[in-house]
Image (tube, rainbow, N blue to C red; front, top):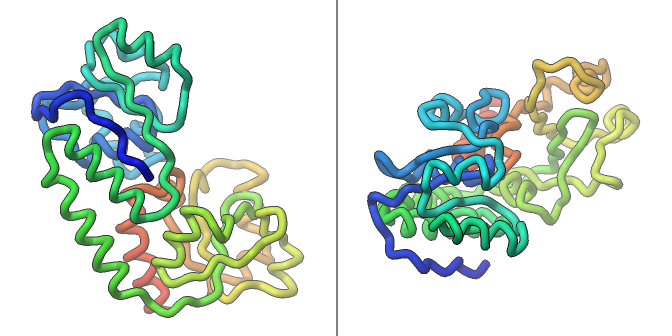
Length: 252
């Protein structure tokens, strides 16, 4: 993954806003005092991130560039491409819009962390995350067949970032046709382990009702519940979740 160019000198007093839940996470974990001027409203919800308490210390935005310009950030972080119009608008207001690419491996996640930490003038803030990833990679557990499952049976691609994190936790993501784990498969040929996301499990919906089906609950002995909020971005929160999943498997 190519590093994004830093046209601004790293500055410990840099004023930075984030428009995206995933870049919110980077700012909340890496920024120093006085650097954060706004984060997206999603990061202030306990249903979306474990960092919601920290996020509520800062003004919220609606994910649109226009909602942060009045706060005069020097840098605005988001993820994914948005076209030249937003770049031009940011420049008109003296800000630089940095659109980070979506990482595809845990190593790319930490590489991105290092880039943002340097931008913030706080390169040392990235070091603990690199050390944690190095330790997890050096002590990989043997792989067991497993399947991540969320509401409605949604699972993961065996080639995606989620599957990479799952492998680091010791589970090989099963190939699932259509990306959805059916009740029929669970009844006739279930994977050795189910890694079940609890994302928005408190909300009544058809998706969450699926997780309470007798076929699913019957597999409790081989089910490990995971914090689904960490999987939304697949970012730094996954380091702690990988460690927790390893411990949960060992305890069974």
